[in-house]
Image (tube, rainbow, N blue to C red):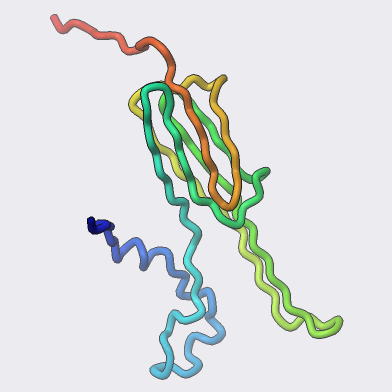
Length: 148
């Protein structure tokens, strides 16, 4: 069975920072690709599954500390956000040769079919994957309104 994936070329272009390596933008122009040193902004990939009692949400958030992950549930609206911090530094002796820093925030929000029992929700983070179990609220809170 073939895996079908949706490709959005505009999404890929919006994630590229053309000025990330501005100092070397014109070095070797027409010899190497212009965006060679550009890095893509982080993106959170989600997998939501459902059974009779709960929703299970898996979010890929690599390189993040678990203290920097925030989950909020309001009825059936779920929001997951994380602060991404990346620092690299290369030294030769006591002299810094190269240093890079990246700070940013990645977030996703989505609505579920049923409301979530907030008190029984659990979450764990391991190997760059956040797994959240959101039990469904028992009973229906929806009210049917008759039209006159």
